[in-house]
Length: 556
Ligand SMILES: C[S@@+](CC[C@H](N)C(=O)[O-])C[C@H]1O[C@@H](n2cnc3c(N)ncnc32)[C@H](O)[C@@H]1O
View 1: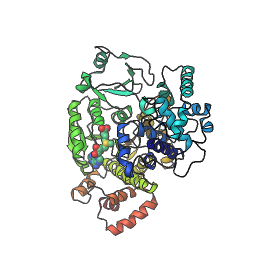
View 2: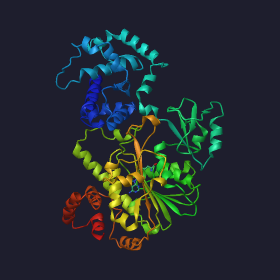
View 3: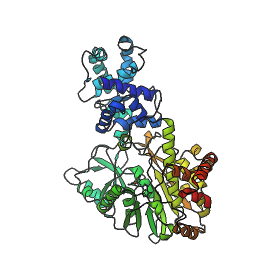
């Protein structure tokens, strides 16, 4: 009973756009305080709960026409069917004593409480409302149970749906519709052989020519954008597949494949070496390795001890023979030591706010986050991300940097890119946004120009990409995406690289220090707005320029 009230409160919270998903969950008593444990348990057990809320939240697609965020055993989905059902039976009117229009302070709205209960009655596994029969809201709904079920069947027939679960797909349960992407790892198996394996054996898949989203069970097709990818039905399992076991199949979302693909476009084996500055768990690294034909050299940096172990395992499983993995901080690397590196991938830690089908980011902390806290957190992340790009820009032979995040926040995306382009390193080493022709020219969705310091021309011809975990091309709502921002170097002499290296060796720069909050802020300030610069200059004075970045700023 409490859960239904909490669930309805969460929806109320989202309805009124009072805050983030985390905030909504916490406001409903599912994520903090005494109920925090239960909230986490609920989230952990019901993987669709948070992502869907999140999708709705970030996309701001809260829409009164669409009844959404409904619960089935604490599961959230989007079903544009319950509101019309409730309306057709005039439930709010007929049962107004139990579901009054005006509710006492702190109580959930009658509308959302009703929808939550309806969902469990009609769509939950047990088709039951999990509450005492004496609880008035349950009793009120049960009075109409037979008619509700009959109306649902009628609607199902009218829509030509084979079962009631199909309503979920219809309604756009995006997390459940994201196809299962399989990357063929050419370090282990070639494409044709993998397709032969998949289409034969005791439970063969059927290869279909034209993409249909989501793919039908036991079928697959070639991804229209990436040659290495095969697209399967969302629930397809590969854990028993021998090609998965031997590393021939890598399960990697399409969005996660793009940065490596963009980085390695037109790669020539003679060109040099590659850096992956933030490698673990290693999916992008192993893709880069494969795109190099498992030859040449990839330097893979990973700072975290624990994640480095995962990286090593993943690289071994993917048979990457051309990767030199280092447990090291990329910011501590000396550009002069990597004279042959021409391409650099940066996929740094970010808020993860664009991840649809994973819970870990949201589970980390379900406390409500007020606007100031959120802004401060994003500010720190953005400063760190900017620092990584600035460092990459100093590599003497680098020609291409790809920066990607799985964040939906402009602070980590367009604004970081804008600030990077304004940095002294960009100017001195000649970095600019690559032309669109070099970065997935056929991919329509690009960055949001208004967030790119108003430089619409640049974004139009540039490479700042916002991309979805494409569930279906027609479902391109602005929610879950990665971004790959590519800075291609113009042909300019790397006039300052030698001096920079000397400075670093002399200990003047200590970019690699663990950046604390203040340093991060100062790091960002060198290329951020003048207001911030002033603020940070004041800070710098106080700190007597001891931090990494204040020294950097002073020397630029
Ligand atoms: C978003 S994850 C990278 C995911 C990876 N590219 C993949 O696709 O599998 C970011 C990683 O960068 C690491 N990292 C963060 N800062 C770093 C630094 N300064 N140097 C090296 N690694 C860093 C984090 O520990 C984390 O493992």
